[in-house]
Amino acid sequence: MPHTPRGRRAPRPLTLAAAGALVASATVALPQFTPDASAATTLRGYADARGVRIGAAVADGPLRTESAYTTVLNREFNSVTAENAMKWDALEPSRNSYNWAAADRLVNHAAAHNQGVRGHTLVWHSQLPSWLANGNFSASELNTILKKHIDTTVGRYKGKIYSWDVVNEAFNEDGSMRNSVWQSKLGTGYIANALRWAHAADPSARLYINDYNIEADNAKSDGLYNLARQLLAQGVPLQGIGFQAHFVVGQLPASMKANLKRFSDLGLEVSITELDVRIPLPASSAELAQQSADYKTASENCLGVPRCAGVTVWGITDKHSWVPGTFNGYGAALPYNESYGAKPAYTGLSNGLNPQA
Image 1: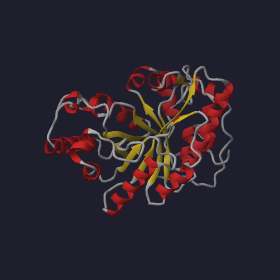
Image 2: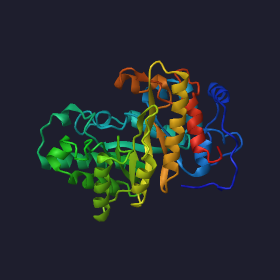
Image 3: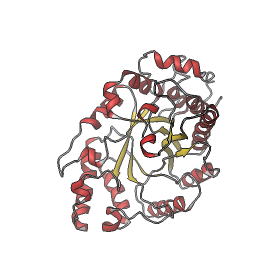
Image 4: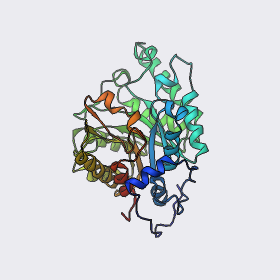
């Protein structure tokens, strides 16, 4: 991706009050990788200046209905990921019958606002339509179904999506392969096949394996590391590893940067793909301050490693976060509060992106 001169000194990051004031005022979308005086203190401005991605997972509902949501999205982020619109149950709810409306809406919005798109996700054990999850297909037929879905989906967005989370959450915590419908019927070879098929459908897209709880040097990341080495040795088109980074406040792993580096040392891109930092509710001022530090550290852990492609947060505002519905008693996980006011986490993320901070 294009780079701007690294010698340009970036202005100081926004104060929380100034960031909150910006949220309240609608602005035009900023050109990607073309920072100027008015843009430099946004997340997007800092990321553009470094030639990296700062992304957000985008929900279709608020994308369609909330102007405050799109104002922040367009101003602060140069990359978007479909939160749910590109998962299998959304795209192919009935066999061979596709619903492209929400996915197309996001891709078109991104194109109109000079934002890249990360595709998420082609092969996952969860959010499968019932016809697939309960189909009891033979290995041969399941292989055919998977190839057709990848060919159709990646082919539709060829040249419009810069990277794909091809395989999502393939590992157990002990580093063994998850016993998904794909693994149980097709064996571990489904991963290499999916990557090859996605590459054939769009040779320009960067292809990732994405997972959670792999940020530390542990059994799960060891399993993925060993698989990545094997795939690369076999010439499989794997270009990146996505570290989801769903954290609890104050619990970032100390080995995170070194762990990302060992994947980078294989010649792979590394990206934080789903960052959020959840807090026990109600969040205290001390916890919000720690959350800010965690956002800064997490982004610095990636950006301090060679071949870090960028950071994506899993949402924009606490109003639409998945956390409260998934982790009982937790919330307040994102850089913006439910009223679209910038939290201390925004400043932490901003400082992590800004090398002059």
